[in-house]
Image 1 (cartoon, rainbow, N blue to C red):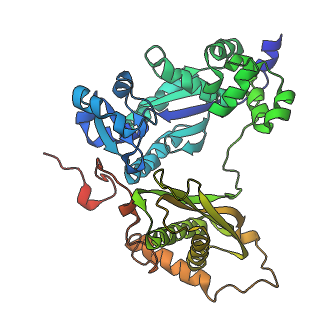
Image 2: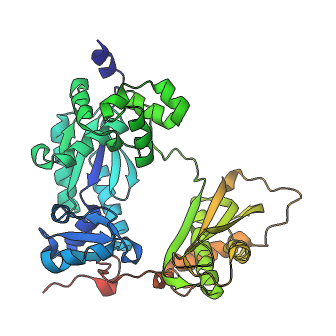
Image 3: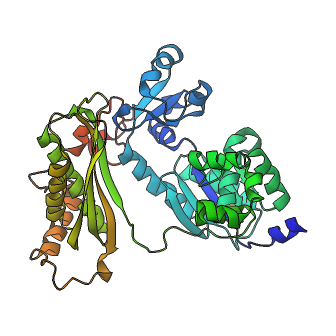
Length: 430
């Protein structure tokens, strides 16, 4: 009776399309010799693993494994390393989403390699539909994908997890529209495999005796909400086939925004930190204007290197703006004021960042009668700068306080070409 009741709770059909080892697949598009070979993509500054091919997984490579531990695999097993190439990934992402969107009733991109799809009302067998999406994306873009289909986002994520875990048996497509099948799968999935359940929350749930997704589904949602908030309660309800979690792109603006970098080598120079933060402020200013929001409070943080003997604590300073803004000039000034308050002589710093910790929609902002007036023609100046930089390339016009090239801060020893966005780096046919 309970299963029948749960089965009728959500009439929606929701799917998740996920690119297999997406970053590695992007490289393989233009380097066919990488097919069938163990490949990993490294994070910024080539510090740790962020994407692994199946062959690399078979060698025992773990996600977030430090680069320093990979040398034996490179020498003895032919492991291939690639630096992150975000320009390439983002361009392929746009093609990836267009290909998926042409096949479904609704599309909600979730990350660079994942998208939720709405299939409610579409005719035909759902497994065949998932397979058609898979074939179309592979043909149009060249990226292999897994497809999970169920009644809501949480269970679609779980179906997608199963499509990857048992790839050979499922052919990377899993459809869960029968409640008894869902419960069988939940009995096999650890609670940490459920969407939104991180490692810390998993530890808390384990302490209650909840180790599997099925045990979480059978937990008391009201009690869990009291202890861990509404997010966990919604997850429990979705595991019981209610529809609780909708699209994130509901029109509400972002509440925060961050730009940060880890330096290739520790620095103690104030000039290095100031030029980096000025570049971060310019980057954030562009994003704020693009999204039509204003920064109301800004924070700067500095992380000391482990070898620093002067301090081991992150230093930060926050300033609330009397007049919210997206003017790069103001953001740079505020960032440098925060830096002067946080900076400590003799300390070597390994990371710095600028955060907008409070933001408001520009269209809904009413200026404070007693606040300082905005700089004259601020909007026109920023609009002109953005237009020139869009048409002639980022950094064509910049402020003197900025770094000449922010990419110089990133160490990328195994960088591939920007095959789809740079005339000078197009692949050559031989």
